[in-house]
Length: 321
Image (cartoon, rainbow, N blue to C red; front, side, top):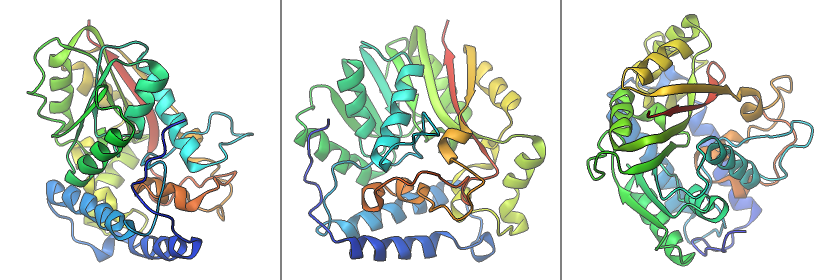
């Protein structure tokens, strides 16, 4: 178990419900209510929005984890009992796929609030995690949590951009992971090239990412804003249109940098949950904002969500040989 980190103080169920209602009301606006803007500006706005929520909660709430991923359901018949458990399951799946066991240096790009980094060290025996995050608040909170957990010798968190790994020399990194962040890298192809450069021979890149099931959906999502399609969420504008690909296109993009043994594992049903239960509470939203603990326990079924339903969810890995 992780050490308890007193980043937030206790809060009532009512305050959590109020914040949840406000967030749901703000996020479910159709794209017809927003203007498609430059991806970098949109991404900054997205992170700023989540940080404003966290700042509002600071001083009112205390949570022991701040998972921001979609979560993973290993067994659909026996789902995780809490959002935090689901977040850990997804991080474990990434760790297993990445072969993190006893790795000397792991670079985690887009590390949320450092929950996964602590898990990688504690459960996989990773010697050193160097995490990068583009959001200043995420870095500050992550560093605070690492200090309180007394893991400064194992986890380092820095402000940085995924497409600029210049702080790492060629052929020096054992593993690179991007847990639910690669879809935002702009351009993602540059990240692939940088990852290939810094990985050692035999090093592995592992990501979770959103991939279109076919070219029809790909084009619909790419042009959702232009068409003012109300079935797509506001935050889709934080994903560069060039990053919405089908599997073959995605594979070609990675292979172009030199990676081999490229593997795709489709875990859509175990992330989004049961699409046949339309009245199921959407537990994805708390994860996106690191507010999962306010919405415990984890419901048995989860929506194939309003926010992501056109896109499939994959674990993607590739090896430098």
